[in-house]
Amino acid sequence: MYKKVYEEPMTAGTPLPFRLPEWIACAPFEEYLGMDILEARDGMAVLTMPFKVKLAQGKGLMHGGAVTSLADTAVAMAIKSVLPEDTHFATIELGLKFHAPVRGGTVKAVARVAERDDRTIRGEAEVFDGDGTKVATFHSVFKVKK
Image (cartoon, rainbow, N blue to C red; front, side, top):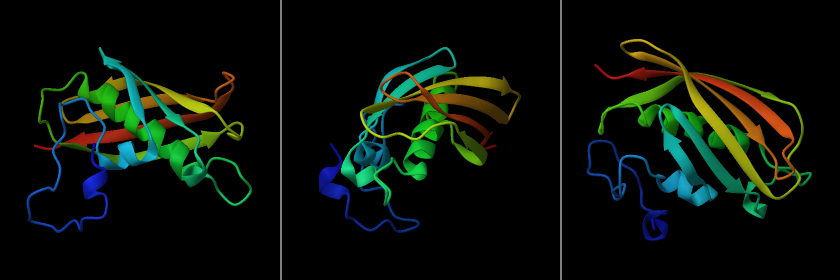
């Protein structure tokens, strides 16, 4: 959907060269990585991402940044499922613990909103490989704009 604008420069203060098709949808970065939103409702979300060569590190395992991106996006989609459309929020803190490498297949992140107050939302996600092995545990904090 966004391929034609992948290489467009992003400049502060100018209109975005893309538009999300709906509130809970993949943005260009997530589409580029191959993420797919399977579910996002009631403070929970499930996303998948196929392991393609572009996501490999030098030894052929999925790059840790790709795993982190999937988990962070899954939490963001869980948060979107409980916030009004067009609410601005951003990750302000995150952490990830790896349990096993991803060697191939499709990776799945299962996320949930863990705590929420007026402007701060804490989320958690577990990431699994195609065989169902837990490969990472993720936590993050998001701040909602005033």
